[in-house]
Image: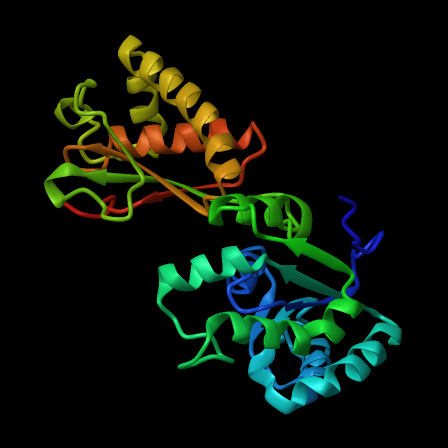
Length: 298
């Protein structure tokens, strides 16, 4: 499938309009665009879209990438959208795209059955009739679409992955926020951890004269740990594991990965290893943050 994206959006403003029948994946798409750095709005009245676009252009942050959802919740205002969209398309200095999500009736019915949410056009009536009515109301938007995506055969994770790879890639090419977090077991395991590794089997600088008051950020502590064969071997094995896992997580559509590394107090071994692994992963092209929860604790 050819994705109709502007040839070069660098330095230009982009507005993405997302539409389609209820249950087709619009909410997932909007969240994916938001995770990719777009300023997102759901259910903005169509008559305010030009005002919204101008406000984005004139904001102090100069919001260059924005996305919004337009659907049957607009009511009678929906009929004004085609003229507004055509006007936005011809304005200079702004790329505008309309992405329309499709889905077959069987899948929509199944999704509504699973969520037990009422259809906006059939709150207490026939679901199939509501779906047909919605398709009819949205046909003018479908006819204007720059891209039509059929979500029928996608799982949530597959659709998110497809959107990140083809429709809403992050501008810096970094589809996941990666954090190496050090902590001390005596202060508890961080609840936000995705992966947890224990360094308490390594030699402890706390019991070495002159190192107790220092931290894993100090070169003396790093040198002490580097001299340990167990530390070097563990660092390499952990790096190999993360080098394998991170691409798999990105492919699955995971947005955040927090790898927690613990020692007894959270000041020496875990800090040094978190900093080292973060540096190793940066050499592979990943944007990684090293954070130390218990560094300042006694």
